[in-house]
Length: 435
Image (cartoon, rainbow, N blue to C red; front, side):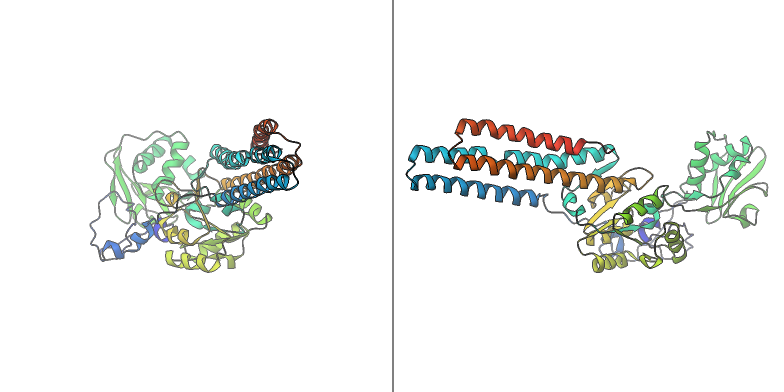
């Protein structure tokens, strides 16, 4: 139910129980279900709905270029008529007009400013952060509040084995049989054990077909023994979240949980040091959300539990002042995505939120978010340098034109030279590595 409701633990659906559309069958047997409502009225339809966005536009650049052209043309015409008025003659007046129009061509800024965005996007791509919407650079400048979903966002999607040392106490044969049991099972517990065993270089044993008892666990017959992995009362034990046994003898008792991403504490501390508020919206139980808040040194009042998809959307709508970045990974975050000022996701395997987000990032950590903010700050400073140079260059060049000290040929040389300087500023500013 994790990607629908935010509940990270698997549950058993008994006959007659109503379950949400979009729930994932973690068993190996098919399940026959009856639809209780039409698709158009279902929550899943709302969560999967993608509203087409407007064509991307760089509004700030458009305004800058528009103002740039208006000012340049006004000064050119003003200089032309001023020279005529003082009796300078048609030829000098035309020279002033042409020189101003040539020397003040906005090509440099029109190329350099978009290039800052392209170079920043390229830099982030090498760090595993991918920009989908060009307007994200403008949005990031206003972000003062970062809101995280918990399960799959602050935590990894897979469950965590809290006592991995018990695996190393098993014999080679026992570990090989265990891997054979879990290697194709889709349950989160099986996935967690499979990852641990494969990381230790274990090879699966050649076993008979593994059978599954729904709601209890897995069973296989091998080497004249019955091996079980599942609930303690079924597999033969009394302790642990999941027990591995042979003929009723407990070989290992596993404890599972969820852990914050390895760098979550550090990255969230950095966001807060930068003056940004951090909150959690989760569909998971209150005790699990409180535990995560304590682990990340966040106030429990900023961490909200047992929230429905609609509840998340309402919270974002009432708390977002065009300054909120929402990070989520599941369908239960979809409605909140529609309300947030800026959005991002670490998940790209389900083909949903990455189509709605402004950016997505890969990897097992959250450092992509810090890289995004740092790169956005670098891009902004570089763009400011380009604009400052353009203003200074035009102030001097146009003044010379209006004084009659510039001819069209010299203007034609200065204009591309200024473009080269603008591009050099961009390359130096956007590609310079931090010490």
